Amino acid sequence: MSQFTHSIKVPTQYKATAKILKAAIEKQKSIKSLIFEEKHARVRSLQAVLKHYSDNRGAIDNAIEETGLLKENPNLDSSLAKVLVTELIFGRGQLNGESKPVQTVRAYKEKLQQAISGSEQQKKEPNPRYVRINTNLLSVADALDYLYGEEWRRKQLNPDATYADFLAAIRALEEDEFLMDMHVEGVLIFHHKWSHYWASHEFVHAKKFILQNKATCLAAELLAPPVGSTVLDLCAAPGMKTLHICNVMHNKGRIYAVEQSKERYKALCDITNEAGCQIVTPILGDALTMDATKCPDVEYILVDPSCSGNGMQSRISVCDEQKDDKRLYKLAGLQIKILSHAMSAFPNVKRILYCTCSLWKEENEQVVQRCLQLNPSFKLLSCKKALRNKWQNVGDKEYVQIGKNCLYCLPDYDLTDGIFLAMFEKRPDADNE
Image 1 (cartoon, rainbow, N blue to C red):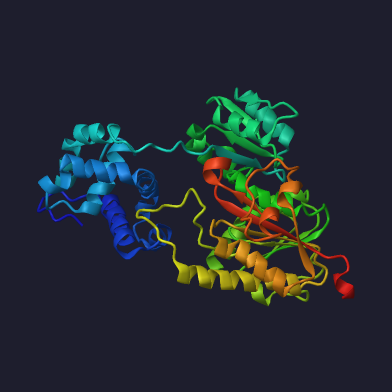
Image 2: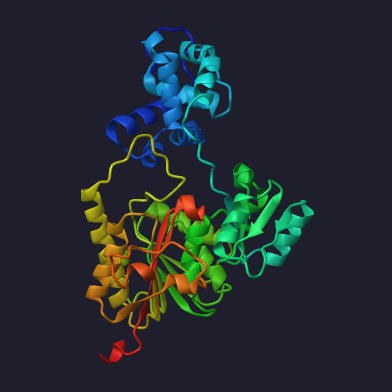
């Protein structure tokens, strides 16, 4: 990657990460898929560097420009420079080896720090760390006892607290405090400082605690299948929502969990097995081929199809993403097919929950609108009412009778990932029409 002629080579992980960054910027490719394709196993550990660059791209690019790092060192590859500067300033704070590029960037450390500290770019405060208790393996009471034993302090809300009060309490969390979520039982909220702590915690590795963003937890909360019911998760991998549905059902009943990709299917099998899900039947197959003969007696369906994913806060973006209308058109076409199939292929279904991690109307309100037109035996329920009206953001009011019943989780307002949810119920007289 480096064009320097030097006896000491640039460490492989820096070169491989710079290669990924270069491809992402020049070819507009997904960082996630590029990392997955990368043969250097060590580059996965530097995914954090790419995330740091994504979060601080403006400040880093400006600092490189302001300090003259690339102008004064024309042989230094720009992608490698970005990786090294990110690691030095926002990552580990130090660089490995004595290669020429590493030495060069090290020599600019003070200038880079000054440029970044003087940058007008406001660094966005990260959203909190959400940790969900897997009640298959650990009760809420035992989880709380564990936290108290570790000297965590629970922050209590007044019984009549509003949603605004709740959000204010999250923003004001002290580092040794945690909060219980007001919408979803078993969701714990911690100061963002503890994100890496929980990512490597023994309870997380043992699947007693699940790292799951609060927004995605609303899917199982709204679907609300009773204990003993039969549920179909049509696009299930990696399995976080499947596991949560299992918790909601107290591990009693049956869940068909469908996944088309062999690799993702294996991940689904692994997590449901490790997390003690006794009622999950994983199925390797296409959602559009599932019906009442393959998945009998289905009453509740979760439809969480492939989407643009532009609402995910963990997403790594290294350039200004443009709205891709052609891609959205294709995605929406598939989403309509899957949701409409769920509405028509299972005669015993009572409720369907549609969910995307997108903030585009093409994948959300427009999909809902089209599926209601194709399937008049279904009606929308109000997600806001299901959350006791303790929510603010709903769909676009331009979609009459649709927008007000749908729900958005907005990252800056709700302190979560960006998620869209819509809840359908089969009309009681539908079978007689």
